[in-house]
Image 1 (cartoon, rainbow, N blue to C red):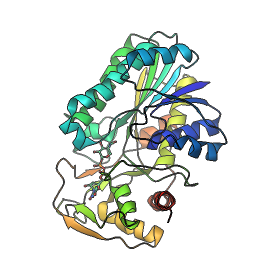
Image 2: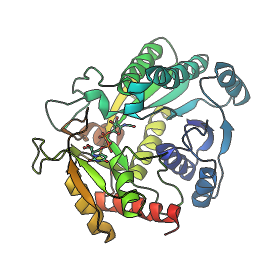
Image 3: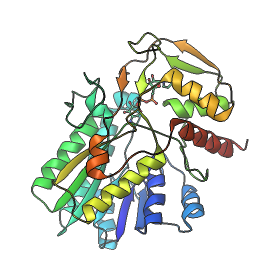
Image 4: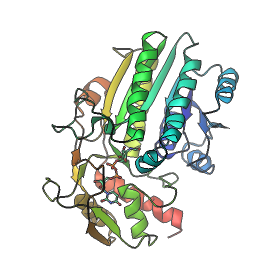
Amino acid sequence: MKVLVTGGLGFIGSHTVVELQNTGFDVVVIDDLSNAQISVLEGIEAITGKKPEFEQIDLRDKAAVQDFFKKYSDVNGVIHFAASKAVGESVQNPLLYYENNLGALVYILQELQKKDNANFIFSSSCTVYGQAEKMPISEDTPVQPAMSPYGNTKQVGEEIIRDVAKISNIDAILLRYFNPVGAHDSANIGELPLGVPQNLVPFITQTAAGLRQELSVFGDDYPTPDGTCVRDYIHVVDLAKAHVTALQRLVESKNEEKVEVFNLGTGRGNSVLEVIKAFESATGEKLNYKIVPRREGDVTEAYADTTKANNVLGWKAEKSLNEALASAWAWEKKVRGL
Ligand code: WQD
């Protein structure tokens, strides 16, 4: 069966293409290369022995999306990663985020709606829960008003999919990711942030590699055990495997509802200081860091209740935080030639 993976050369996308190909799915990737390198195709090939088909398409180009679905008329499963994801940038340029993240979604769904049967998997985010009142966060935890245009595109994206699924043959799974980190064990693919990393783990590995002088820890006065924020860091390979499991669920019509939601995390919360300690112990590197004031918009804590993903989806995160950090470091060293 042929699957379209949009954003398939990005961080989570590329790891998912690997797992799909390893499971026997035929993959065609769309990427506009705005935040990914074409060389990722070779990384995927080095791991799986196979280069996926590739089309460089900007999904805001409606005619190009239509042409794609004409050319690949056998595609009836889509995993849609392609999106802009920098929270701060979305505040500065909201229309870019609405166009990239929602325009593209609408054009793809318009094509899938024409099919007798189509399966759609959407990259959503734990950001939809904002600061939840209770931990861990289950799928029943109320969604809160978005704190940024980026977060809003994930919430509205979910609603668009629900509306379309109601009146079409599209079945969908919405995957709400917690904090994806790490890299493939082979160090052939990993995260490649453009410019200064906004996320914790790439900032840590770039600091250890000497590209950044020191890591700023954003606030140590939160109401958590050590005062720093708590997140659920999930290994990207575990996350990628969840997409394969979700797709199989849709293909085999095991889904109980037209649209299902799953939280994807480990169920463990780790503070920023714990991540730093884990990095140091997993890699033997000493990390330069200092405490600075809080970053605007950060929630105090967020970690997943994984019961539904475990019991209904039949998937469980298997890798540890130390493994994730060691793999992120191996990748960083390879990229920097260290
Ligand atoms: C994790 C923790 C920071 C950098 C964001 C988006 C979310 C998402 C994933 C996107 C926080 C602290 C970070 C640094 C630090 N989705 N930190 N120094 O904020 O949980 O989630 O990325 O695709 O929507 O909001 O992840 O990695 O930025 O931060 O102290 O230099 O690390 O304060 O507590 P976050 P993050």
